[in-house]
Length: 204
Image (cartoon, rainbow, N blue to C red):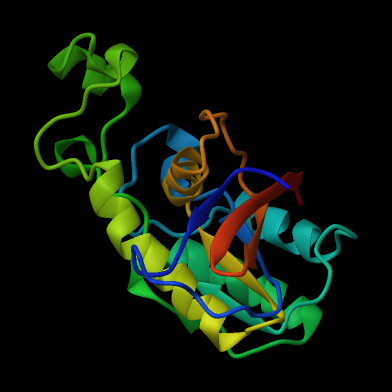
């Protein structure tokens, strides 16, 4: 088993329950992905390539079957989730605002070159400007959202279509270093006796 982190309230035991599986998947390519703009919580739609990526992922043997499909409410995720849900015959797609991408603050809509010009050295250093949603704030909404999904399909499995920033934060809290995730890349998670256990990454 991989690294794990508790989803239950700190200091409170979580009753033993069957293992619940979740596959967190990054949406298909959006119009801003295509031109290298930081999206944050802006809502650009999928490109034609992004829709093709979702269709190809729907045919992937790595996808499997699920009891529910849950998505960030941002359109690039909902549209990706809808293609996948239609392919596996599960629906409707449910949405949860807790699964939205990290708020990029003043960097939203900018390219890396524009960010470097206005905030020299900050990208490389890992520092971020005021208004940028830090990991603690991001996880404070993502973890309850995942716990809600787990409660909904207790002992089953759920496909969760979300964003790269969300996946990175979940991996990071489990001790994994950040490695770029492609569009329609994903990470398996198991909820085992109240603990979130990282499984393998997949590229759909």
